[in-house]
Length: 267
Image (cartoon, rainbow, N blue to C red; front, side):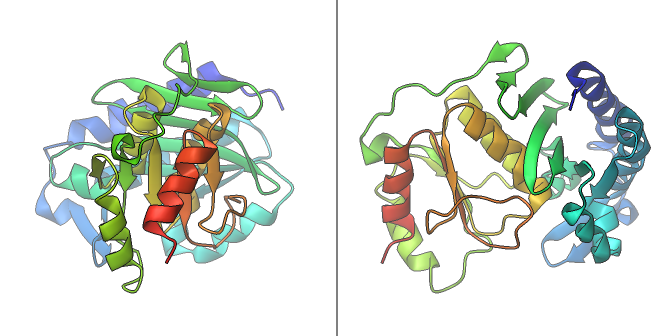
């Protein structure tokens, strides 16, 4: 498949700057809805998805689309992931709670999935105007810079990363929080896009999640893989973006992955 990165990037930037950014810090209360406790949608999410859906379909004729908000309204759309056709997966505003509060970080995320494999992904932050993108087998880039991970520190206290316990089962949380005390600085940003960009920049060596909905993680997981990192479930099994499985650790190298698992998961 020939992926036109330039055209796709322009579409994502246009959606972010025309449909999302003008509403940042300008939302009215009636433009924010709570889909379920702690899970928000705004008029910007809906506008961004409505813009991206036909624009991306036109890039790959015959392709299908799953947008976060459309899938919330019609969960049967998730069945498109079993199609042999390429499927666009859209997170129209990642970090909606931050966005709705007039804060950062937030971003627009898009990926292409075909037959259970992420082929390419894009993460765009319209405030910082940074574009993180990857294509399977072709590498990962932050703007025009090709990305690789640096040398691991090897010391748990120097391992910094994203630690999201929001959806972690109650029985796992005490162990994970104790283990986090042996790691370096950790943060729950409320925006997976931010976490993956922090890994790309070398600020983080890992990211840890329990809930792994495809639009939140498929683009960033591909970035980590293309940088040479490790992406796997808590039990070490491969991450499959279309799977309903839970638990995900992304790390810069195998030793860091094992350290994070030992401190946050093993009991």
